[in-house]
Length: 599
Image (cartoon, rainbow, N blue to C red; front, top):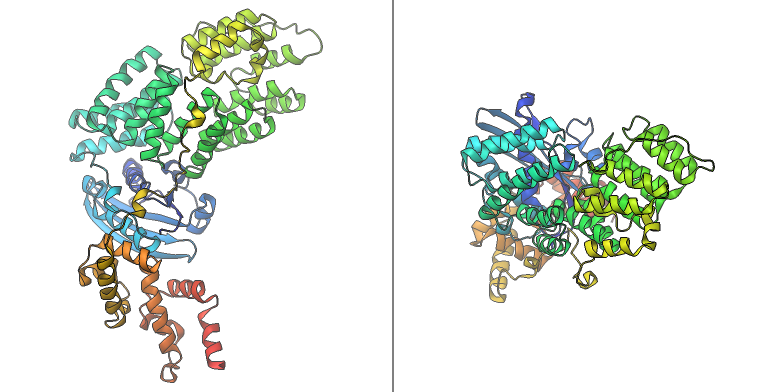
């Protein structure tokens, strides 16, 4: 069975240092992530979290420690026109050594294709070092055969990850150019859906314009790639944010997570849906998965902080939301929610700290006024003009509701909340368990509103537990060989190692051994894992270690160094030898040899 490991794909370094080609480096890393997330038992750190170390002056070991990763994939590239040369390596944290390297040259489409030599050999290296998995099931359909369309697609993703209005507009332009060249590029349509949705939530385009465009690109994307993870996500988001129809949204997300448990956007949207309808236990479960998969994404800490806010754990909520703002400074949604936590908490010291820390926030004056309305011992004399109850700015409408609530006009507060819900402003999707509006639950009209909008007409507690992102897939229990084949090929394998000493070849690969004994590489990987309970490299190093022990104690070899003997036994480096020896024998090679001589 495969060992549970965490792998991070670091941003590829541009050997020419020309920033205009950075989009290719980001795309290369993301394509690797998108292939590796389908390996059962391997947890892959999200592309977003790894990207934060793009310019970091840290060693691989330090980065791995920050990401809690066992292995790193890192590399560099040199791009000339539509051709690129790529160097890639797999770094093992425990042994502090590079356990695989590869060099590849080709056009950008071929290098990023699902079954490219680059992606195939990286996957093989992981299989050889960490254990068996169903190789072919990892590969999704190639996005496009057009180099030009793929360049525009990668550029669109590059700008989309920069999170400003101007960058999103550039992203949309690039995605639109990509589908003009290749109208069948399904992922580009789903990316456009994300862009329009984001622009709407930020108030940069109207809801009607956003969802008009979202509907078109989603229908087109679904016709081209209905089983892509982005397809499950897109359809669920339409139910969730366009229709506020939570039951079908959750059902689509559950199916998507079942198919793609490590696709973090699906997990994140599912936690949002559970938070909206009030199932905080399930929301926390998916929040933890999101943080595990994507530990440097500010939204995940923010979302978990909100869950704690809704259940009344205010100190923990502040801690998590402040963590989100540390990761993403000036994160406005986080600042707004910190105000809400302080408003519920009623701790003057905490609120004063909040005001001092975020005093430049655009709504700070009205926030101070609302807080004083609720808690000041003397009458609040300062007054503010209406801040836009009829607008599309959800924060303004929300603050208006707070203002009239604490002025004592509960009916107007309910009317404003109705307006926010009817306009489907995203802030009001999470109002059901907001403790600051608890007083309104004494009104039948308010309770009926919450029941009508947020009550899901089935028992969500009966839903099957969603597997963690590292849960084993069913393919691991499938037998690749029958009993007769197991005996025949294990006999051939042992003969190849024991009689032909193939392990003395320092560059021996699973594919070479499979060819020699006449078996498919994937079946050989399964055999080594199932029968010997080792991965391929452990199996090979087991024979190398046995060979080292046999020659190290010979009097005729006393003139040779330990490292020379290791090389004679088939080990390829000092680091890999020492690491495997200590792991197996619980002592250093020198100490072991000394003990043998003394005996």
